[in-house]
Image (cartoon, rainbow, N blue to C red; front, top):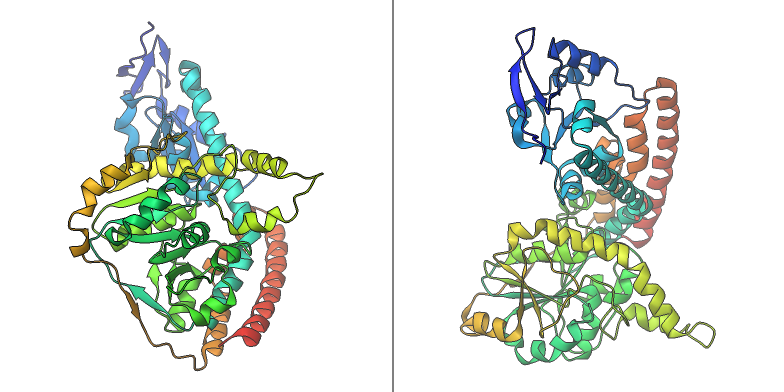
Length: 500
């Protein structure tokens, strides 16, 4: 096996240099001058928000890159741990690993990755060809994910803003949940939920039950009333999952401010408004004195629900029906509100099986992303989080999350569960007086901020940050002003016609 341990020695200039297999990673004469030349030769036709250096070794180039690009996040991706003495030159240091793509996205976010400049330190690329190829693939995957997230935000952001204004102007029975110590079960709508329905019903007093919106209908149909139904989906189709009205027992609805919500819920149900940190809905709720609780933005409502549940109890949280994999038949436990609507269009020329097969294949990409979130974050909450089923053989594990069956659950939780404090809904009186005026004043004030531009027009904001030509920047700003003014006019009409 070839020796890849670096040998450190003095260069002719007296600075430290190193070599591997007789090949130098830095100049054996003057490493600092070499690093300065490297920085001077960097070319970019846009203004980068971050720079990724692939194994810069002793990082002689880093100070000169900082001088040329003073406002960027400077990052190193290490192929080897032997150069950690130079890590202090960087804002972030990543290591080649199977989770590198997720690590990059979690640390840098979609905006920096969508405007990043990745550079090889060429001697490292030559000495570590396999590592270099793997890292470039991970960087590409992270950038593509960032592009997709920016695209999703650009497509939905104006809808989310309008949803938040409708929510804040119309909600009538709002409050918060107290914290407790009882076990919480989160019911998702994967196919494995069906076999757990009898257990959920039989042992209902032993836990606090949070239902994802898509699991609400199958639970209610089985005679199971959740304590809370949670939704963070801003798409119009999300309303269908929340529209179930059968039964006399009424759950509390924990709804993100950006959620699409059926109009009757605002006046007929108890609602816990949820808000993302620094989200625009937070400003609206605060301005209108609407109580709300913090939630975390995730690509999947299950991730948001999990973090919310962990904040509600000091006890364990169980994920039930969270398959996170395509199924051979229905993708959700039946009945399902969206399935009920789609089935009406089935026929001889467009049979049910064709539709289900298409759904199975189209769901693979999104489910892989959702699954990756749980895998990459599982170590941080694995001691309190479990996946619960009736001995289901799942296609994919969820990282460090332990899988348990109902017998395990009863041994762990049933004894004494009734004595444990459970979260309670605490309602607050809302004052609708001048709410529409307050919300519109808040909207106009927010619209002048950079945070508003980045939240509502993320693609435009990114183009502005990347653009180096001042004339083109002026043109982009003029276009953005037109879009902003048109949106404010739409929102004003919306609140005045539907506001409280």
